[in-house]
Image 1 (spheres, one colour):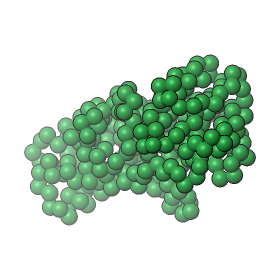
Image 2: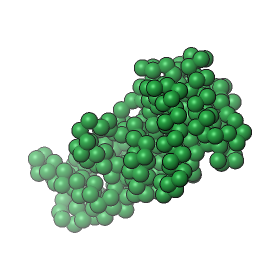
Image 3: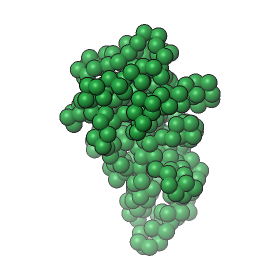
Length: 305
């Protein structure tokens, strides 16, 4: 909780400052609206939270800014709660997890941290170095494999889809619990590269008809509303099953999680059979253990601490 509070300080401080006065009036709501927008909550999620907060204040007959702040924490937690879901391993052996993300989002580092998280939970992990376009990616993933003492499948200059195919087959043959596929960094506007990701997904399914079992997107919390645009684009291309949000410790834009939560809710309303897109993990530091399981309640409390 302390790590989370420290990590979210830059996002939360401007929101918390709104409640330092003594009155609950229209000026407070206007200041709160500005603070939420500055935190990159987005116009629609901000409006949703303000409407919800006004209702809660009226029902609770709140009489102090401190009480209103507590009600805002509840409103944020309730909005974010559908994003809270554990990553389930073991229903398939191996569980094949495909990880995507734009360059610089912390994708390969997150895979290293996720590998440690899974290994600490007793799972055997095989890494697939399918990010063959970026010269240092294979070496970087190799460092994480050594650090976590797990096996890795890689080919120098190999085809990303072929590497993924070989890794899934190797994972099955070696009875690994998890195969983590590091795909190449992509911008959603690079259509020919997005097609490469679709190809990896199709080829993985040829190796295992039930795979991939998870398609995760790593997004950089610093990018705010641009992160939401990435989520939408990658979901359209790959049908995402979960998110990892990194670098929340260095940003004032952590409110984007509220925007993602509202998008996820509307996506499910438009497609009733669709799976939600939860936030499995958030990154609040550089250390291996700084990849934390997402908790809506803890996030909301830390944000307004």
